[in-house]
Image (cartoon, rainbow, N blue to C red; front, side, top):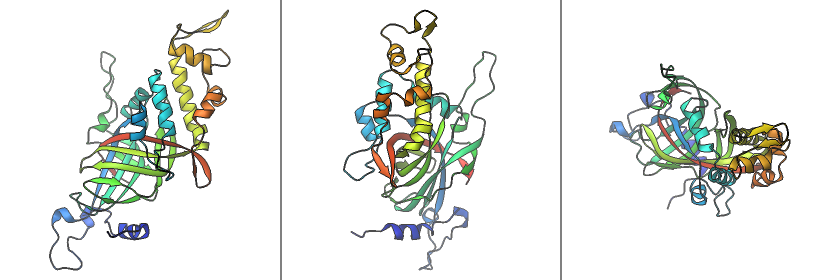
Amino acid sequence: MHRITLPILFALTACIAEDPSTATNLDEDSDVERPADQVPATFHYVFDRITLPTSNAETRASGFDLDGDGAVDNQLGSLLATLSSLGFPVQAAYDHAISHGSFILLGELKAEHSDLSDGLASYTMFNGANPHPAPCSPIGHLGESACGRHLQGTGTFDAPGPHYSPLIALLANQQFANPSGGKLPFWIALGSTPFQIELRNAHVKLDVRETNIKEGVIGGAILSSQVDSAVVPSLAEAADALISSCQLSPHTGCECPLGSTAATVQHLLDTNDDCHIAAVEVRGNALVQSLLAPDLTIDGEPALSFGVKVTAVHATFTP
């Protein structure tokens, strides 16, 4: 078996044309014209679904071995699976944010062959902006609005960045899986406010097509500094929404439905008993601290592993 090292892959990636219209249709070593489906091509996607794990099995299926010890690393995914089982609407929060365009993630695949046959490929992601059509239709006479209109495969977007070095892999059977990690943008959206993060040592495993990513997994590590600035506030929003059914009494403090998940969460996190949960209360909780403790070291910094399943549809944008 011939082993292709990463330096060779990076060198070869430079040969993939920026646009299929600018790619040569001739093999440099032959006078024979290459078939149209064998020229380099670029494919653009917008993510229409991010699926959080809800069980131990899904947590493992949504993660990667990021430290080479033979075990899947997905500490935050495991926590979210637990929260989901307790009734936290974390999946609904992601669904709402994506369909309403609260954040937009774009993907770019550059393949050696336009028919996505086996060959060299690179992949990267950008944050999206200015979607057309607008994510939600105007509110109708019944007060309803249809959202997700930019996720139907015909959307156009701006792609302001960030611009990271692409992940490199050999495309095989329309599967892209990078052997070495890189950086990718991502979002934490457990409550009403999405928080941008950066995945370090990022890995993807994508089942790619010309017009969509049929299924895939994206994972990596979140530096502890971003756990504090993004994951903790997002978790606080989710917890605060969960206890919205509780009532503040001037005599007995915050009262929640007896035996409910809201009562458990309020008792655990609402330290000042005011029927609201703030980031400082989540940050200071010993149980949360243990659940969000770093399980990796990336570039000398403590980090938390995270992985999810994804799908994407065709998009039009210029990085």
